[in-house]
Amino acid sequence: MTRFIVNGRDVDLDIDPETPLLWVLRDELRMTGTKFGCGIAQCGACTVMLDGMPRRSCVTPIGMIEGSEVTTIEGLDGPEAQAVKAAWTAIDVPQCGWCQSGQVMSATALLQQVAQPSDTDIDNAMAGNICRCATYVRIRQAIHDAAKTLEG
Image (cartoon, rainbow, N blue to C red; front, side, top):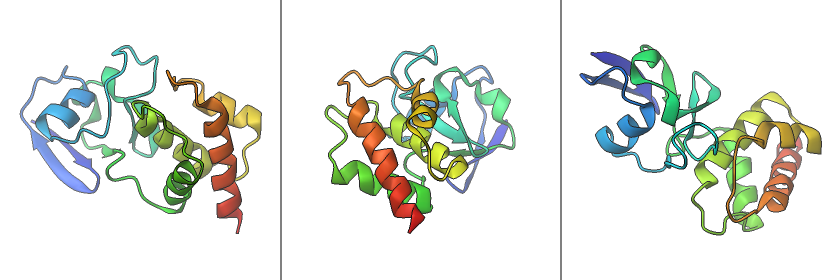
């Protein structure tokens, strides 16, 4: 039995401890906002927060997260998350949208750690998130816009 918290809800699952968190979220808990991209932690589409830090769920075995708190795109909240989501919408960041939940998770984590990130901060924080539509310029702008919103 593996016990953990997802978006504030206690979860107890009797599942193979080697099962990736991504598949537990999508198949067992029916939370499909977190996407499968590459399966080898290279694209970032599967990014969730694990105990407040961005983590690739496709390579995180469920047995490793006993007692941890997982936040998915469905449960992402707080001032940074709201600012990022609003900025994403305001400048129409997504095209196909496949990578966007991972992008939003990583951008939110960045703003939780760095209030006014530079382009270099953004590039470093977002480096593991691939966008096949190449919306990187809009992603960077949205993060800057969200930071300005949070600044007041």
